[in-house]
Amino acid sequence: MTLGKIYLHPLYDYRSSSHETVYNYVGFAREFMGKEEPKLSIVGSIYNEVDSAGLSIAEYLLSETNKQSDTMNLLQEFFTKIGYEGANWEKEKTLADIKSLAITDFTKYITDWEIENSILSKNDSYELDLDFIQNSESFQAYSELAKGCYESLEIYPTSFKKKSKDYLWSDYVKELTKHLNALNLFSEQLEDLEEKDTGVWLKFLGSEYNIYCSGKGNKESLKIFKTAHPDPEKDEIITCIPHTKLFTNYSDERIYFKWPEKAKEKIIIAHIGRHIKVKKK
Image (cartoon, rainbow, N blue to C red):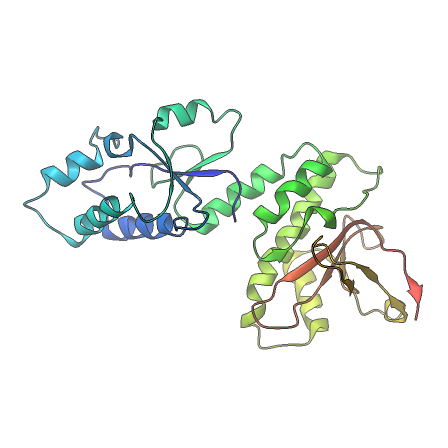
């Protein structure tokens, strides 16, 4: 998943684009295509939309027919097949129509053109998502966007509990984003880590991303932290001892999570808000 709508946009200059740029452009666009739930949107005018030199992809492919190259063949194959590879076509619209709506709609454009919200990699898209979610106006609004933003975490709106009134939302949302971003990035690394001790993982998480973490301290090892699974469809109680602490090492504002138990599983974010009430073993 990813936040907002993603549109295919012309490259900056079809004639001078390197093979690497075109390869990245085509490959990245295809990541959002497919027969089931495609994420890529394409306007009906895409074949006539022009690059910085005023050249459309249709004109480029026709004018270069006698100058075949791997780069041109790649573009030709891609633009020939996009009609049936799976995308959300908005046939009555142009990119100008879409950009006029960008004031209210969060949109991104796959291109190497340095325009607002242009993307050419997963990291480009993620950085824009982080900026967007950090501008959420409330805890509730943030919770509704979180699953789409943090793709390497198993996180649901029901993970978000009551937050403290001790912090301004503008401060809280930055700290919350810092922690969830750290957990998301760390979750991506777990399969590649040779060390399998979760205690070591927790220490690494804290030191690598400069956040407060806890989970195996002397006092906490005597308590059982239990909460409902954040997925409303799962009638399951899970134990979540590890957690991060927002702002300070003594904060009651916490993110409780569960480490994955099998390969390819994600970190489950079980509880975001005031600390879970616990009981002795």
